[in-house]
Image (tube, rainbow, N blue to C red; front, top):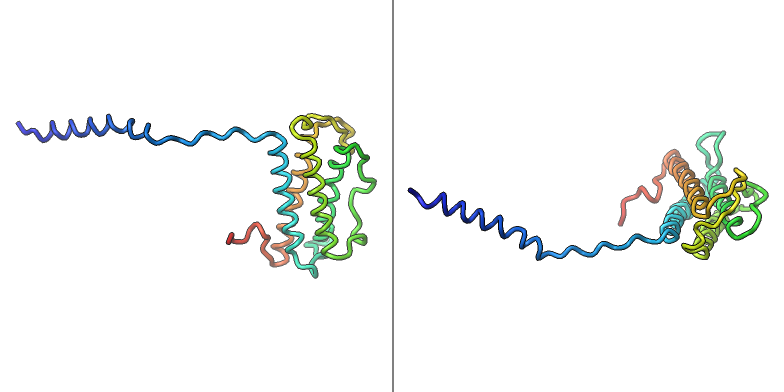
Length: 189
């Protein structure tokens, strides 16, 4: 009888037995703890703000009054609307009344630089509110000026993040219809 099959079986058994020992030698990195609710909210707020600010800075000024169809807002009006809406969260969270007008007037923001500054300020102001509230303030109650209902700071902020995301998506279409590529869709360097 040949010793080869027995030798092969013994080597295979030894290799299988050694596998768990090798796996145990490699230490998995420790799982990071979850970020706090206010940090996750702040990061999400800042991310959508970064995207809208990038568009505001990038889109050519001579196309700021572009709109894909007559029934739609202009590119500038979309940015003003999204940034202005943030104050329906920011003001109540700071104990101030909501803005009287839903949309800032284009006539008050004549140049691209004025609109870019307004978009930046609205997201910076929202970030400051979220930071000031911290985790303890995420459950503070506000009154939604549209629904006339109490809401938690966290829930109201996420509603305005979602609103900004909707306008980001609309502006991405404006880019494409104007024959341009949105900043987020460009190859990363």
